[in-house]
Length: 513
Image (cartoon, rainbow, N blue to C red; front, side, top):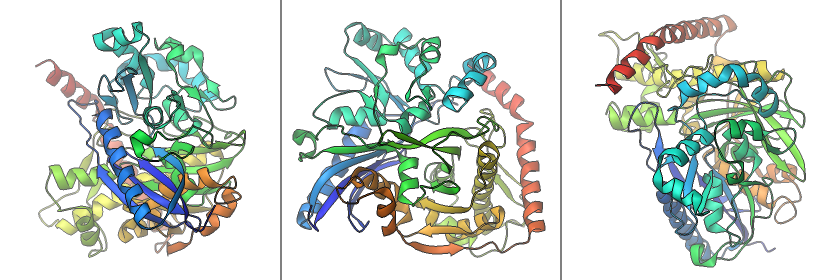
């Protein structure tokens, strides 16, 4: 390797896809980004065009490669971070997706899954670290195999492939053209046996999914073949593939037991590292999920994760659909001009609620508004709602793992908001560290995973020494004030949960009109 050696890192998320180069000093450069579109044609259904994801990801990669060449950089490997639990079905002859991808926020099968929960929840929590839940990639694919002629015919002709976005992109990028996935992606799909690095075959088949259609399991740091020059214009090894949140944790330096990170993207994900043994109380909270944080060198490291599905996307919603603000920057700037929301409360449950209780039928709400309410107070309430949701995630993680959070580091686009992080520190009562280039944590982390076996760094521990803290946000309120705010929040959430039955009835009536 030379001083100009870099890793081409891809971070394919839900709302956008980007590529950049990462050098041995941890610096991220040559960044290219393109927006991705998410469609919700009816309540509970959330979809994306997988072909568009592929094309835009190729475009950002080519843009980054062109920048790197102009800068005299030498790309020595590719590393891939992707959104998790978004499923694709495609034709291996044409390489094209056959149906819209089912996005991880999708809850269309929640009622059917609810009927399976009594028989399966306990078994699933023990083996895969999560209950039946509100979505299933395998049930989605099984329904297409049954009901969609193009998918059924492709399966009969043995030209059908299935996988999450990592599988989809690796199949297109690697010369091997294999259908493979990794633990940090498979664990989110809901049928990965954490302790044994295998699929839970009985559960997959109970959903009507053919076991032989599953992608092969690899490690997150592994040999995925070499890139196809005709696709990306380079021929280098692909050395890492991981879920974006787990790549973000690595890129923020969260490797050890007790460290927690929150990555704010389309949703906000809170991961608490618990070590090489699974947590003590899996499933203690409906919304807490046991995850593989990373697997390399034959060893799995575990985390407990909770998430709020719509935080960054909630800001996009109030800006783009409601036109209340120009953009997220304006929300942050306005929130910084007031000391509180003056009683206005926003619950960001646009696609349902996960904490403190799993309830797919819950709705978002904005309450406590009066004639005196200002735009700045609404902006503050929106950020405070996100911060409260993250605080609930931390509480659920601690309860499920038996591990106390010793520090919280943050990344993702929303981590650039100073008022959000200050509100967050006040609500959880511990300091928050925002790392340098925190919004690029997933890019840096996936590069660390690819390059930490001697390519650019001798180990992940050495790689994280290149990360520095940019700012620290200390709590500024008393424990009593913190408790009062949290109690008010729980009361508002409880009120919304009381309306779920009526919401479901309204949806059913609208569906039959």
